[in-house]
Length: 622
Image (cartoon, rainbow, N blue to C red; front, side, top):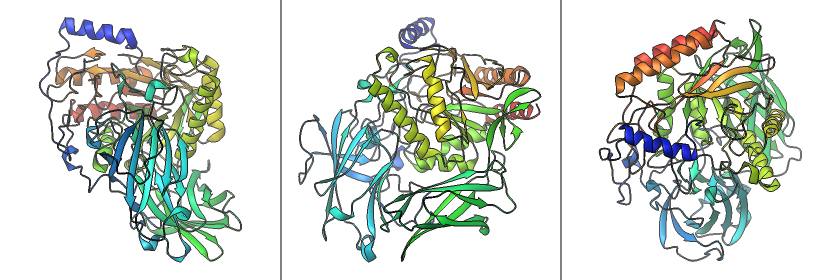
């Protein structure tokens, strides 16, 4: 996003909009609230004031691998206050030293909820922890888990390095058993380097100097941190891939520790009743047949529960997981390539969802807030979300899976404007990050497709999109790949003639691309009708207008008319989906169906839902 408003063009449009009276640079003062440390939030959400050091995202963060169950997980959250200090990247880690400031984990340091509200390229986090005695009893090991840290993290426990991780969007963990003191407090120190767009790394929409369609950076620890006790050999990941026959799953596991003679037994449950089981060597894929299969779809987001037992000698690791039984593919329907869900043609009617929050930036203030955007997308009658240039925490996908939204998952882009300057190492780093993200998320039922490049940002050549599409397909042949969203826009323009989907962007649009001989067709971005609501906008930021409307009635009428084109013309051309920009305002963009603070729904829900449902229904008939 978004092809008409890049760089100088965006600034020019802002100036023109101000001159034409579309933009008031002195909007009404935004809603404010005091956060846990007394700072005033620039723009408060309904959940801002609920956040405190004692309840920072207290929910178990990894629903697809809960030990022994999601209802009763054995774990210790390390979210809360940590000591914090910015650094210069040269000094030694501050072992045994009290740091001068505090930060509320897991909120990025630029956010008001973190308590820091300032960027640093280098930083240290420090926390003293009492590990429960039960965690190390009976020969158990202790793992330290991080949901995500931007960008590079080195972790020390009691002065010894236990982990080093590169990549701001993927999780990592470490077995810290051997470095724990026999008693007393344990010291955890995390050294972070967060160059944001100061380096050619995945950053998505983050910028050190945000403007236009680029936003405030989100650095440091931005997803949950926790400890858990595990056996010496434990399950690190369980993936359930639906069979094309829609009556079974292929089960694959990753282990931490020795694989020798480890066996896995998995039982599938539907509404509490066992409907299938499988056993075998833990390091080999297993076929798990399902009796009386019930499929997952947005209309019926049914999920199976799995209980898995990893056995090795007298050691056992028990976990609970879940997944839905569904397939997605490209098939000929009336002679044209269409996207089919569970073998049936479907129209993937999506919103663009960027996952930004005025109080937490990349991190939703609460789990209820995280759920809110997804639930409202469903309430408005959409069946799909395009998760735009960001990777969310596991609990976001948990809600998408359970509420029933299909998801196009973008890869966070490299900084734009440098395509011809990317080194071989930059490209290799991007490829590695793409593989890591696919590997981490390939068990999520809601994800039906991957998008490696958006509008050519960070795309060093036209063939690069085809190369990344092939890389992703090899890793995950069960999903679609949209090799390049916005083939007609904006950097390194051109169709790579690869992947499963041909995708154009058209503001206001919608674009009406036709399927070709190999691919289905979607409009990957359109709409963007702009309506600022005084008192509910990000302060001191010029509006980046796409198509200004004068009031709520005009926004409703504009949305309905825009979507009616998809119903009446797009479906007839064989289109398989569209993405409306966007579910919420973000900083200088006021083209959301909700304001940035989520306090004002700018459209009439019934009108939007009616045209959306009519469009999806029309798309299912062809």
